[in-house]
Image (cartoon, rainbow over all chains, first blue to last red; front, side, top):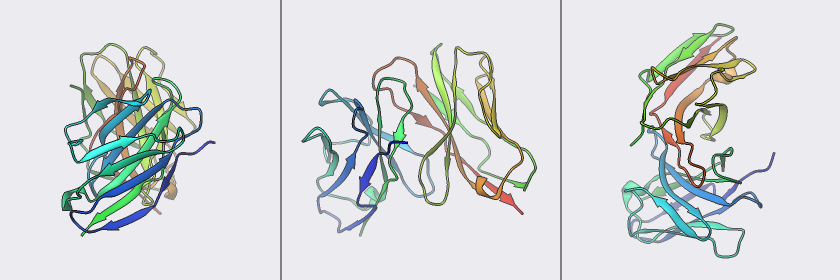
Length: 113
Length: 116
């Protein structure tokens, strides 16, 4: 089965630093997502992306967050100035068409110190 | 806005027994999808089963089956012949059936432990 690839699997950063989380969605997919899961809590939607623009974003996705699909294969999530509360597992996901099966990556664990 | 409620934070079952995890949801939509995801200690999100709301027949996948009660807005997961590898967090999730870039709304999860 095709896979969504996320790198790195674990990233440690200092508070106030910028981080970029990288994802390679499945090649013919059109819809891309980022979700977040703070340890011990539920998975929360951050943002969806289609046709090179944001389709929807949650309240969590404030001005410190941005997404980009720079080269047609990678899909990145940037946090400009990390806070302690940004520590979480970040999942990238993609799907081919609306309401088709959503494929999740294995996640990037972000630790902000 | 849609909400998903899982009222059982933790459950346990003996190996080879059957266990049912509960999920209720709230929506004004008539067409939607419901899911159960498994999250083992590796924290990977694994799709267990998917139900389309317009289908009356309950979805099944091998040892996993659902009891979908649309009027009651209930979507429980039954795991038969439980195995040690079923030990994981289980999340119920909802998605509107609008096509496009619809998001998943998750419940808080149920931690299932299968005991030998």
